[in-house]
Image (cartoon, rainbow, N blue to C red; front, side):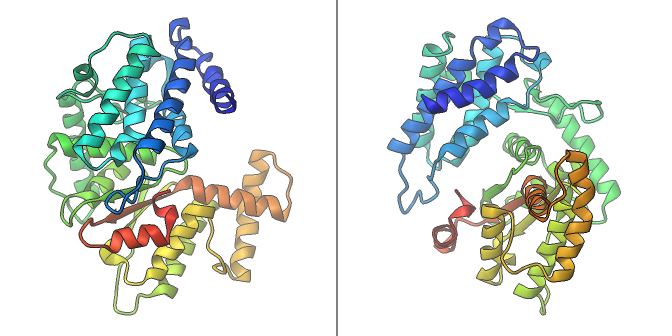
Length: 356
């Protein structure tokens, strides 16, 4: 009951800001259904050696609600549209982590049942999870003053927008990309953009080398006007140089409040100390013993104007807290990993913040 009360108050207050009464009435059904799926999936889909990343917690419930909060009233004007939005957010948070068809089918059946019973909308499973999947995103109107998070019902429009953005990327970058936008590629770009537009949005992309993980991330970052960063591995590049690289990323995100997409692949991880530092940032937003005294002075001077904008008292504790909040909100970490071998499973066991 406590969970329902918390999330109902958050979602209920949001839906009162211009949404139709019929949509507002589905708020409680949304919260109840999300918590029910979470409880079922945590109980029935437990982690195994093959499914080591099946670790679900209450953050997943909050991510679903956070995704729903991205929509504007103009993009969601009926209970049916709101239910489809909920299905999309549930799929992004839960279904995208399921690795076999049986688990995905289990998810589809449970979600379809809840749409019928909780939302009281008559719908068949094929309408929600058929050949044409439910997709929401904000990539259709990049030049609009306010980018609307809306359902994408016409993939040809998305295709044209991606083609245009790819041309723009190739004109403004020396490293040109030659991408073919088949359906799965477009779906993945939408998934990445959804993660990047959210505070504390981080991703782990699993696939064999050359499957397009980095290219899709580059294009999504370009479309959202987010700075894209990768390490350049040289013979002399080691844990010390990696810490210096992370330090600059943290200054840019924590002080300047500039969004960054930092992508690193498993082939670039030449020391497990790299993973340890990334795990620390994902967990707490900082790396122990990283900052020298001159770095701390730089943070104090840089964060003070931010404190004034936020109306917070100028204390050392508030400065450190605000800096860490900036790092966690604006530094998006994208891990591109291969499923081949045991390396990924061992790393996720040693550094649980990578998946949890």
